[in-house]
Amino acid sequence: MARSTLEQWRMFKAVAEHGGFHQAAERVHKSQSSVHHAVHKLEEMLGVTLLHVEGRKTQLTAAGEQLLRRINFLLAEADRMENVALNLKAGVESHLAIAVDEAFPRDILYQTLAAVSAEYPLIRIELLETILSGANELLSQGKAEIAIAPFTLPNNLSEDICQIEFVAVAGAQHPLTLPQRELELEELKHCRQIVLRDSAQQQKRDVGWLGSEQRWTVSHIATSVELLRKNLGFAWLPRHAVQPYIDNGELVPLTLPRGATRTYTFYLNFNDAETLGPVARSFLGHLRYLSCQL
Image 1 (cartoon, rainbow, N blue to C red):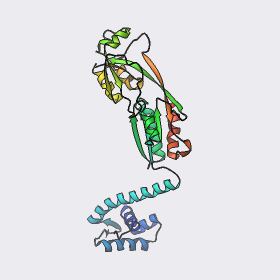
Image 2 (cartoon, helix red, strand yellow):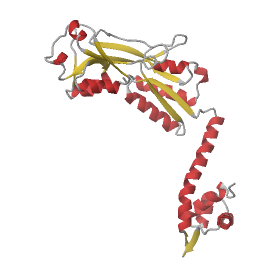
Image 3 (spheres, one colour):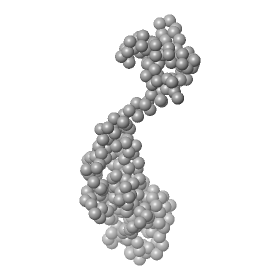
Image 4 (tube, rainbow, N blue to C red):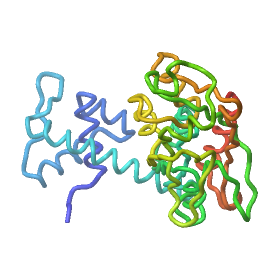
């Protein structure tokens, strides 16, 4: 059982950081004798000298330097613990789980998370990345408080958050792009299509055209993009995910008689607005504002 107190360590830290007992006393709003007594009792109990005086300045001993490094972490953790307790008392949640479809623009998501963390620096955020039905499934299972998904909730209200354009693309050296031309449907059928696997475990969905005789199914948009860049297939992917590669010439939009692009509405889903805490509400507010900039 520890015999020292956090208050003693705080006073020791103040002396070390401010160079003397008088300066530390002013900093911690204690009398100089109280600070001196606390540090002396600490040294006596530990059996080591933490400070020594050189001229008018109080210096750390080698033992004091080593213990100060450790105590800085301990005191910071104690402050964080007190802040968490205050947040809990005020109804501020300590953890927020967000299920988000991989097709949702990452810039918007990351700006939102940064804004929330600036307001609530102690919040632990869990980002659950999903495909298609996965976000809503995690919400229904209670594994996420908020879902950003391309589908509405079957038994609740859903809020339109943005529209995402998907574009048919292939690699610059793929047979579908050499030469660039308007393609016939039969040409697509005979080429490999890269499709995304629904991350839901129970009710999976297929979305879009799936007419190719050969398909590779992957779990992440990034994997699909890499396969396309290697000219191993074609796919419909979010424009924001492929535009940099279209700009540098690695990927080429396919020219089709119809259906070369598709637009999907993405929804902001949660079960009960009344049960959402301040952090969740902050996330929703920032996401709504930033999504309006799309």
